[in-house]
Image 1 (cartoon, rainbow, N blue to C red):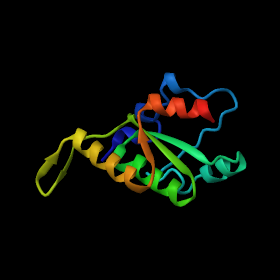
Image 2 (image 1 turned 90 degrees about the vertical axis):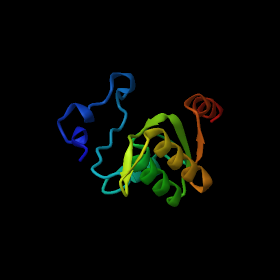
Image 3 (image 1 turned 180 degrees about the horizontal axis):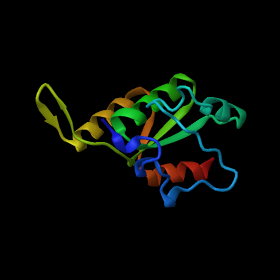
Image 4 (image 1 turned 135 degrees about the vertical axis):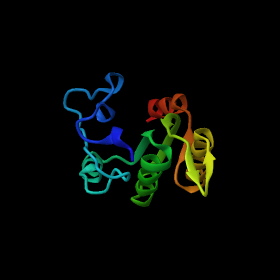
Amino acid sequence: SATFFLPDTPGVEIHESVQPLPGETVVIKHFPNSFRETALLEHLREADVKDVIICGAMSHMCIDATTRAAFDLGFHCLVAEDACATRALSHNGQIIEAEKVHGAFMAALSSVYARVISSKECLKQVALL
């Protein structure tokens, strides 16, 4: 169980390097899919957002679920692959290393759901908008 994602634990604190600017919306979520039971879609639609950049933790959970949902909702998705993290998983007694878990999920997302690129490339894309 991922106890570091529980409310009021250090794992859910916003890191100082990405603190929201005054007036920025913060969406609190309780499921891997950031759209599920949140106002995220409403906020994005109100702001006429068409493109989203997705990063965070964990590649095999929230990144995957949110990217697929965003694509299904009609957004153009960029995933900043080097700004995502995951952990090793096990299946049928086999340990799958975090790097392989991450690679497999990035490969799956890049097949249809998103452009999976570096954070540096994402910043270049933002500059073009």
